[in-house]
Length: 417
Image (tube, rainbow, N blue to C red; front, side, top):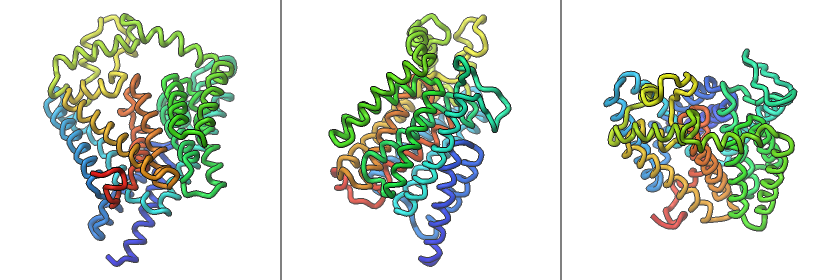
């Protein structure tokens, strides 16, 4: 393939990948169709031009991902329903977003397309979430939104449930805000302002979803980001976190009440929907299956066998409400340790890239990726966010956004090998 043909293919790939980023804000079907087309183009480009996003640091990342998938496969084949478990593992193809995204994002034109596409999608659906809260409108779905209070409703966007909406838009909005404030997005001042507005809309919609875990995590991450950014923008994030706490307490009283009543419930080891109750029964499953786990798709049956017969169906869960515990149940303790190592390695890489050249485009993307990843990780302390396909594909995009500078960059750029 000539250089010109390869360039055209790269341009088309950037376009389909941008469509994936845009569609991920409202449609799992459309986003994954675009992702599937992107994958085909990516593979053709790799074969014809040798454009494989590779470096020693990325090689280690890919090895950790491969090890995690291998543990998942072994657990699936050893579980009670091997065929069904292996079929569920098809979702692991989302890891391919990372190398695809790195390949696209290393080009300035690709970064511009992806950031603009995500910004537009987040702005539109964030605004839709705010409208939903005040009107109850659910234009593209037949179900009614849950009431939040007098004449207000719990926003869910175009997703099946408000938890997915809250987690997605909390992470996406915070990513855009951090990218803007870090100072090197590579976009014009106008687009930076639009990006900041989109991020604020997304966080407002997140609060209106009444998902307390992501709201609390966002406030904590705003304080952390403020400390890391220092004097220039740190005070803005710290002040915004304080204003957010007051605004939520005054303007979203139902959400404020959840932080007290529901938290007490979660800490009650005898309450069937409390996190301590769920985790203790999940730990029982881990103790009986410590090495290989029970395999994907078998959590419900194992968990149901450990709760009283009179427990209602909605409290017989399909996951452990914590990513690390959930992985330990499904893939065993070795699988959970690999999962933890994968997370720590990604966070470490993003942190080192951010510190390498503050204010640069590379550093800004690494910082935004780092902060959004930490936010995702905090939400996963009380929910199995990694098991939520819509939010997980966003996380893979964010990992790519934070790691693209590693592609064919000298190891010295992040402090050596």
